[in-house]
Image (tube, rainbow, N blue to C red; front, side, top):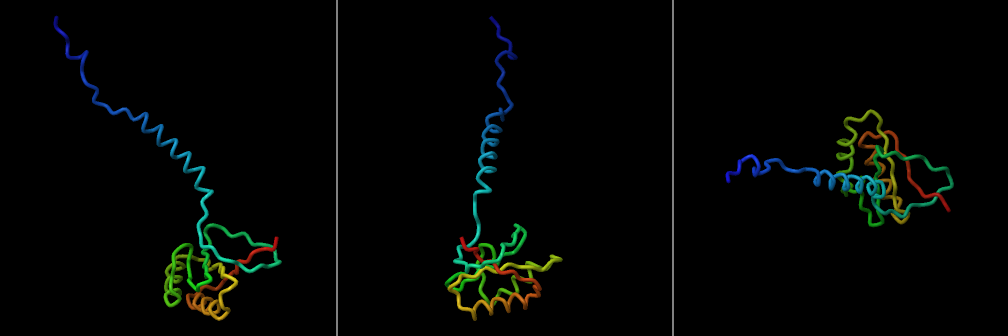
Amino acid sequence: MKVSGDDYSSMSEINVTPFVDVMLVLLVIFMVTAPLLQYGVDVNLPESTKQPLEVTKEQVILSVQKDQTISIDRYRIPLRELDKKLKGIFAGRKERAIFLQADRDVPYGFVVQVMAAVKAAGIDRMGLITETPD
């Protein structure tokens, strides 16, 4: 009995259906969990009685922690390099605005030094981030 070669040929294609299924499940998981992630630096903000302003994701937030470390988003920057970094960040932007959040225990003089470095970088608008009382 002779068996033809067409009946028992090996399959040369890869079945990608399980791969696509796994990727779609991972995509859904990341889409659900991404908004829940919170980036930034923990700062003990002072309280204010004014109405809060809306801060968009495109805004640059400058943080000053209790131990006088300065961060832009999550990246630490020494005070002596702050104006150079800010000039680089705002080089291609038309609107030059930044938000400053400083811990309530940071000395006032250090916050003034940070504000002077921001002004030296050519940023003409600065907002202060505070907490509203509960």
